[in-house]
Image (cartoon, rainbow, N blue to C red; front, side, top):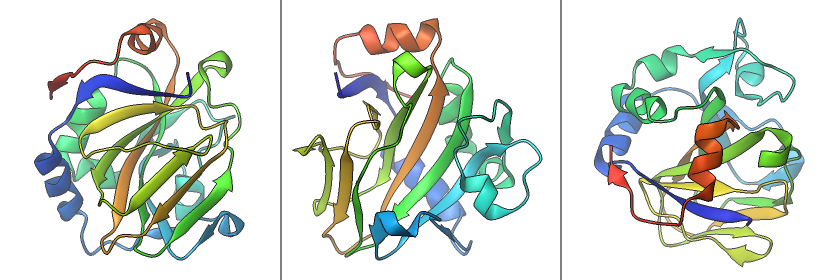
Length: 193
């Protein structure tokens, strides 16, 4: 299983309202410049404890075991509600924006599988029909408010051919019994939270 639409749904309107609360903030360019062309930027919602430098705050350090909410998250009540729905320890949580005309080149993010104890989840906050997310060279069509498990230790790429930004909430969660149960469920429409 390299992808799974999870039985969790979030309100797209409230997601967008919290994103608007962050308007005017400067997004931090993703630091792995060789992996993209155009503009790919990040706002950290959870970061390693004690980190103040934005580059280190947006890094999803697999060796770090202590993460905390950032002031950016504290300004967004619905994002807090969304994260509270996950009954597993959360590591890095970031908003990741891909501007129109930008691409994320095919790459892999190692050790992001249940077998390694950490999974990565994507919740589209805003998107457009021109966004193409490929995992193992197969399209994954994600809609705002959906929650997806993606095995990103496999090759994946993204292109924003649309005219608006694409913003996803990207969550790294530790695998526990709740996550194992979630991943074992059939793909069904979940309740809006």
